[in-house]
Amino acid sequence: MNETPRSLSSSRTLWDLLDRRARLTPDRPLFLQDDRTLTFGALRARAERVAAGLYDMGVRPGTVVAWQLPTRLETAVLSFALARLGAVQTPVIPFYRDREVGFALRESKAEFFAVPGLWRGFDHTEMARRLGAKGVFEAYDDLPEGDPSVLPPAPTEGTSVRWIYWTSGTTSDPKGVLHTDRSLIAGGSCLAHALRPTPTDVGSIAFPYAHIGGPDYTVMLLLYGFPAVMFEQFALPDALEGYRGHGVTMAGGSTAFYSMFLAEQRKQPDRKVIPTLRLLAGGGAPKPPELYYAVIREMGVRLTHGYGMTEVPMITMGSPDDTTENLATTEGRPPDGMEIRIVDGEVRLRGEAVCRGYLDPAQTAEAFDGDGFLRTGDLGHLTDSGHLVLTGRLKDVIIRKGENVSAKEIENLLHAHPAVGDVAVIGLPDAERGERVCAVVERAPGAGELTLAAVTSYLREEGLSVHKLPEQLEVVDALPRNETLRKVLKYKLRERYSGSATRGR
Image (cartoon, rainbow, N blue to C red; front, top):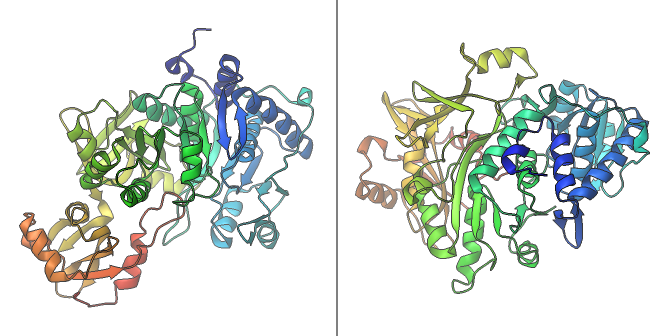
């Protein structure tokens, strides 16, 4: 066979992609977890048996199956078994509880629900029963299996909606995002072709497999034929043993992951924290340029960052051969087939990787413009070289006395302050100004007291305009984050400090 990663990316369905890769390299490892290994061929064979077991349970093409499972070999097997059947699967982040899970089950009209049972001290089976879920079954160590000869033909087209993912749901209910096999393959292809992995690489999945990053990363593995280490629970320094033992060459996840690896490196500056590591890569949250330079300088690895969202799993991605300036200050370039349009500063998208919309038709109508471009709510611009620079979120533009203030601009400057570990800048209601600028800072380890006067003095020296200077400083032990890619939850900060007129210390 003369299959190449580029030719494999034309696969019509995810099952087609797995089948083609399994024929090419059946005995090559795909997923590694602790002392277990699942090869490409073994995934295809076991997924077919599990598909037959699900078929015996009543799962058919088009049946909606929800699953709330941790990052495990069995989770990948179940997901590909459902792909083999052509079922509609709706992954749910395993940290979600009654409100989010109940909403997802009701809105998707799920007919089956796979749970891990008792996991990390929480009884998911009991929650499922409490919520009145249909077809509940446990899928942690054991999966239903049967005779593959009973299966109907595998799906041959990849443009039907077979995936319902969920936005995080911060101050309102989550949105059900509709994806096809082709949109997920297109997103994963963008990541894969930008990073240019080789069969000798070893990747890592340290985030929930139920996140949109799950299929994104798996598509890359299938295209380029290399393995990844799965981490059911990710915490440093405990997880370092897995990275070192399996010889991981590519790690990451999001900006918070870079910071955590960097913090570990600083404990022993003269010894590489992961000796085999050559590349950090991720997305999901803005990357301060100072963090990029610190990783390169102190860890001695490359760092490429990208831009994606639940609605479009990969939009742009930095490439290892980009210039240092582009890697530090941009989100990379879009792949062929991804159209980016900037309208009044907002980034809008059209292309195969873009979702089909939402479960709620009204939300779909609101999200797309008249030309079929998705409104992202992100602000940015394209450089002459075609790289995308994000400058903030529409909701992160602080309007102070009629002047627009970019939260991201202030955050980027404060990230370079030696006493700042992480920072979130928010706008708070203010009777006099409309909104006031508030900086919420997580101190760097070992840093001394940080005052508002010191912060504003530093920002003045860095050239920040006077009207953008923070008028309030809050110092916290830890910024609130979600459980997936550890994004900072600004809405919680706004809720916490909106009633406060504190002017810092």
